Image 1: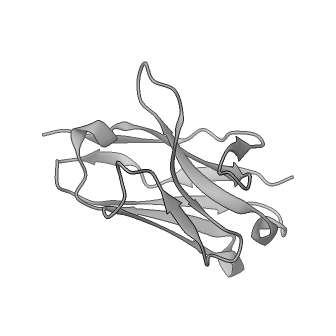
Image 2: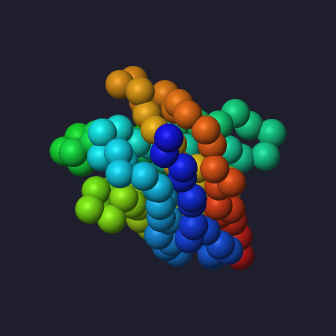
Length: 119
C-alpha cells in the first residue's frame, strides 16, 4: 500500500509562489496516476491537477490552469505542484492521492498541507 505525505504549504501573499511535494512510500508509486486535490473551509474536496503514471499527460482545473504545474519524479517516488500567481481563493488544505482514469481520488488520504494566501 502506498502511503503519502504532503509538504511545502505555508502562508504566502497574493501573487506569490509555493511548491508542494508529495512523498510516497513503497516501490509501486510509478504504477499509479496521481492527483493533487484541495479542500477549502465549507467546500467539497476538488481536483486541482492530475498526472498520468508516466507523466506524459496532465490535467488541470480551470481555476488553476496556467498558474499551477504538476510534475512527478518516479525515481524519487515524489510528485510536485508548483503554484504561481497565487490568489486568496487558492487557500485550502492540499492533498495528494492516487487517481482513477477520470481523475477521481482513491486510497487513503494523508494529513495534507495547508496553503494560505493572504496579505
